[in-house]
Length: 166
Ligand SMILES: CC(C)(COP(=O)(O)OP(=O)(O)OC[C@H]1O[C@@H](n2cnc3c(N)ncnc32)[C@H](O)[C@@H]1OP(=O)(O)O)[C@@H](O)C(=O)NCCC(=O)NCCS
Image (cartoon, rainbow, N blue to C red; front, side, top):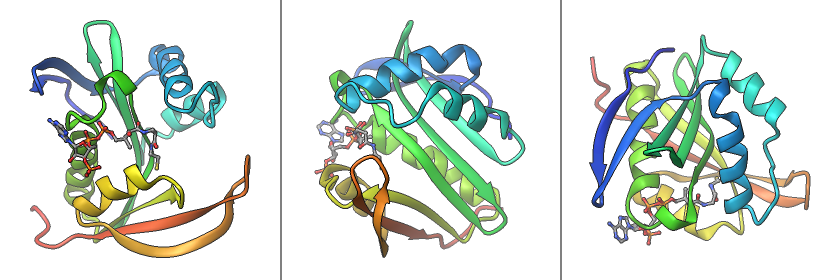
């Protein structure tokens, strides 16, 4: 799937929005370490493998100059978009960037003919859940012990799309 890069302003920042490539992987790993207290739930291999699934997945990155500010990944199959990963640098959080990234993916899902967008979130990640609920996501199944590293349950969240764009 392709995505044309562009520049936008969010909360006073001039940001470049573009599709991720292998050259962004080291920045993606550094950002992951920042948001997950040194851990990298997604390895370099996972990012590289996801970036190669270009026919049905998209990874978007947002930069301010040379600084990676945030990223979001999604997979698109007929009738469904699935958000695989999202993170915003702590120094840029609470400024609307996470919401902006989610809206980009929701819009891509609509354009791809999806009826719904799904994602998986840790049951203890209340901040992310709040963001998703504000966008209209509702709770789905709880998957017991979904997160293998510490056995925390995963909550599926679903956004039912209406008024698909033509
Ligand atoms: C979850 C995450 C991506 C959210 O990113 P973010 O950029 O902080 O998200 P936003 O700024 O759009 O929204 C966060 C809050 O800031 C508020 N906000 C949005 N724009 C704002 C602004 N200009 N000024 C002040 N607050 C603002 C939003 O209303 C929202 O508040 P709420 O939680 O009460 O609804 C980020 O916290 C993160 O990277 N967390 C670690 C990784 C993670 O947990 N990923 C999710 C895995 S499922």
